[in-house]
Length: 247
Image (tube, rainbow, N blue to C red):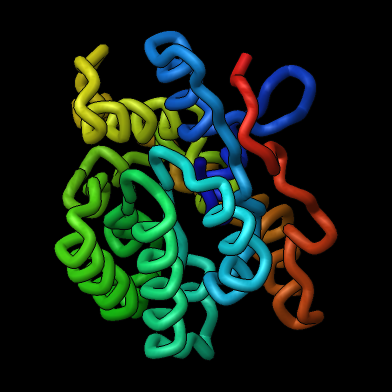
């Protein structure tokens, strides 16, 4: 069972029918092959803040009493100018404490460091470090499985990110899935942390045009939603709200 935001929903790892797959579905696909009677639920919804996860996802997640509960969240909070770190920490702590009590095993993430690849994002690093410290403390408290993406440099490569520069692409999700499976003790299928060959350097005018397209298609709409108090996940239901066989 997994809960969270777009990272866990699988945004930008799109199937032919337009639905999102993502690392959690990839993990479920392998566990379904190797685990008789395996069932899977994914309550994650894009755009959710950790407080919304507490309000909308935590109770149904805890009621499932899953063998493994996966939680990742907090980056949507960190990206907002008015982020209240004390409140974010309290919500994350409540989620982890509840899932640790209701589930057989808790899996947490040390989130990807955005400051090494996103221009102007170094201001976010103190907040990201606070998230990491919270996860580390909760992992120690609950003897949780930890997937350490923060320490990896492979996600610095733009080749693992979608056009919006915020969400992982299919290859990025594939690598996260392998990291999760390794953390759960399954035999490795490939080296998820293997460096990605660098992209050929584009001429400056192509980079400038790409930046302009990014602002028009992604940054401006994101800012518009923030100003209007809206989210990309408003009115959206989880893709797998109940524990069920994965096929």
